Image 1 (tube, helix red, strand yellow):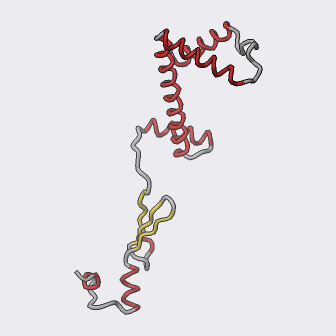
Image 2: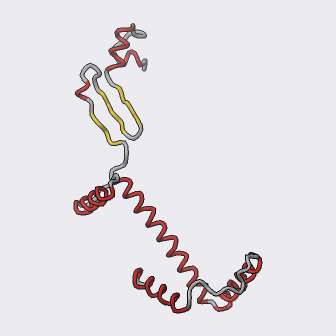
Image 3: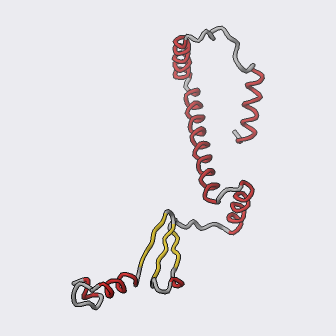
Length: 153
């Protein structure tokens, strides 16, 4: 169907008709929001559409998120983004911890890993071969106990 006929025009519109036809409906997208104007002559009929997906939260969760955002003087979206990043980091280290535990459960594989680390240490050439460990065995035990208390492991 002819697009002009759909608008009630018999041929390409003259300037005035075209302007009226064009100004009847306009959608403006700028950065993260969309503004739809249904009649440019009366901009009060404009409706705002959300440009981002909507996430449904329980009222208590929303209030807590809002409080955190206000405390940190950040937007709620920034708080959520940082929480997601923190969650992903925790998941990464959890998977790494599980992998090391699995490796330690196999004495042959664990010894092979330690031997490989020892080879790489000799290649470093940093002169630290005979240096004492950074933490004493007691400090390492304390750190591991604190980790277990914090993360329940």
